[in-house]
Length: 113
Image 1 (cartoon, rainbow, N blue to C red):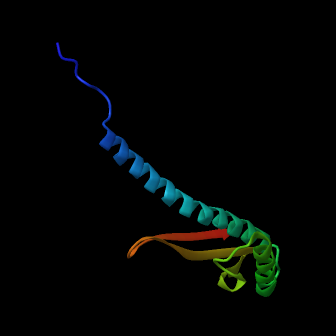
Image 2 (spheres, rainbow, N blue to C red; image 1 turned 30 degrees about the vertical axis):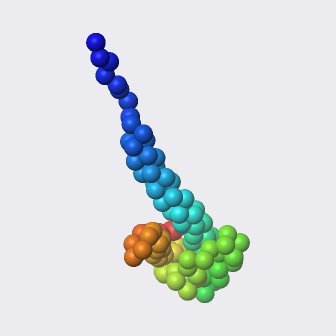
């Protein structure tokens, strides 16, 4: 009687391993942008404490220096008032080069109120 082999072949292991490596590389490039988004959201929350637009932008810029935020500055914020509360909104794009002409475009936006 012949026994049928079961399991994955060497080529299959290489294929699955290649896909996992590509996914890991992609995740390693996206993760820092998510951390920066969290820092921007936190800085926008601090900027709400400003009473004027210039003060809110100044507070954001100071927090951005501490957290090393490079994607946006205080000038990029949209500061408005809703009732007696200051609302700080932001939106920005982040491009990650993948290979050749291929890029991954991440669009981030947030609002602290």
